[in-house]
Image (cartoon, rainbow, N blue to C red):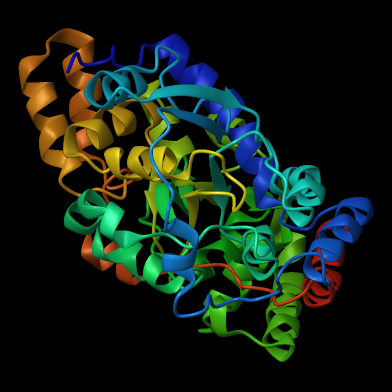
Amino acid sequence: MNQPNPLDPAMVRGLTQRRLSRRDALRISGMSAAAMALAACGVKGKGTTTQTPAADAVAQYWTGKTKNGHVDFANWPLYMDPEKPELKKFTQDTGITVTYQEVIEDMGPWFAKVQPQLAAKQPIGYDLMVITNGIQFKQFVVSGFLAPLDHTKLPTFAANAGTAYKNESFDPGNVYSIPWASGMTGIAYNADRIKTPITKLADLWNPAFKGKIGMMSDSQELGNFGMMKLGVDPEKSTPADWQKAADDLKVQKPLVRKYYGQEYIDALGSGEVWISQAWSGDIFQKNLEGGNLKFVIPEEGASIWTDNMTIPITAKNPVDAITLMDFFYQTEIAATLAEYINYITPVPKAQDAIKAHAAAASGEDKATLTAVAESPLVFPSDADYAKLRHYRDFATPAEQSEYQGIFEPIVLG
């Protein structure tokens, strides 16, 4: 296939500005009261309200379904090269056309938008949608809104997906989803300001950095770090753990310059803060622009999020959609996608493909591709993955509300 053009510096800056705006939105799993109410309706009786499909659910759903030659694909902004080289290759290989729309910008409103149609068993206009792990993912599942995947139609996923992406706690066994891309929340620090290596979450509580510490305003990001510092796995946490973590974060609060959204990356670059919670994709992109920021997965752990390809239960073209899902696990396809978006690819073999692309390139293209191929922010090691933790999987909006009630006052007070 023809390789898409690597990122130029202007596009890298554009990615950082717009992508982080959307990551900031989805980070805030705490929805507005109105969105929460709408989402709660989806959980309470407007779907099939089942978390585990019946043993024959896959056969029941897929029997009799055939390829129709088209896919309507809903994704987030700037999650693919605007020229869409991968989709062109897919159509060339399969004859299946794709209408691709960047219509998802926040998980709460997206769920609220499609919930009435799915509850009424009506198509939503999309056969494939990329949704993030978190409370809305759980609501899609318990409401019966996602098609159970037929893994006999996903041989490339089976062959090429990394082990970490076949055992994610929010969808064990990939019953309803396979990953599109993922990223990490760790610590970043300005190496021009801090000369001693940062290794622990406790470094964010260091009085020596008073007034130069940045933390995230999102309650799940904040809470995860508070719990991991105390040795608590957020996925297995209890309300008592939340309170202990919140108490420790209150001790930290006088040291914190600000609780940030996406603007933390500019604060780090300018020296407004020296050390902060950070998202891996931002740090990689900021350093491509010439920054001197270090990203650290602390000894106690860091957070991992995953955006996932799913099929709405009412999709008109599910066979075409699952064919496209599997296509993205081809090594070359995963490689060119990662070269553009700079987030973690679920296909480890893509690293060798990017190295080959870098070897064949020259000048700035070569440097950029080499940086992508060699970055642990795009290709974490097995040791890195072992330290990554998912967010708490809230069973109900009420449980999430309790969590937010504990952590939000730290930011707002």
